[in-house]
Image (cartoon, rainbow, N blue to C red; front, side, top):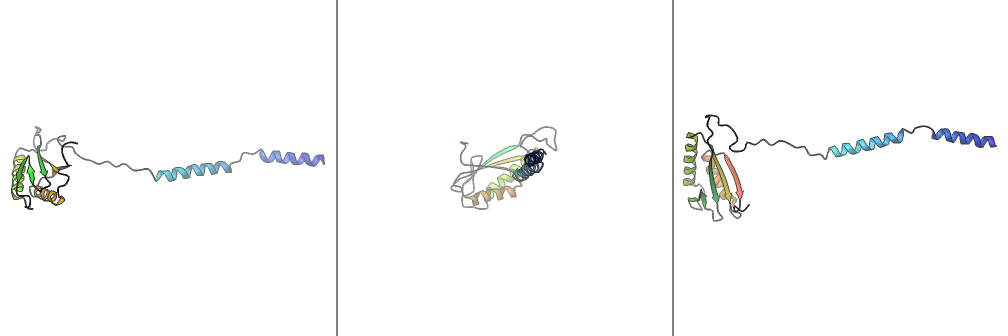
Length: 155
């Protein structure tokens, strides 16, 4: 009987002697699964190409002409001002005087090889419809460099 106990102990020692690869493979698969799942959560950054005003070189002349900066204000009442001068009535959707003035400013800037940059400052309670009227006037005058601000100058 002693021989049987010794034989069983020897079999138990031989059974635990080998390197167990199955648990290691399981751990590797779990880690790989983790990284595959987390790869879907990574946000892709895209480049937004914009040209800042005044940084480019003029195409037609060697001298750098600063752009004409125009401030247009749209008030709550519907009044539209260009460089603090009011144009047309607050109820006039076509804004003919404002459009003609923009057109003249654009032509003058084109003769000097300068760009026209417009900043629209809309008061917080100004109607969006009125801002669209101003944008329509700028489209008629073929002005494309437009930026927006909202509210007062206390930013």
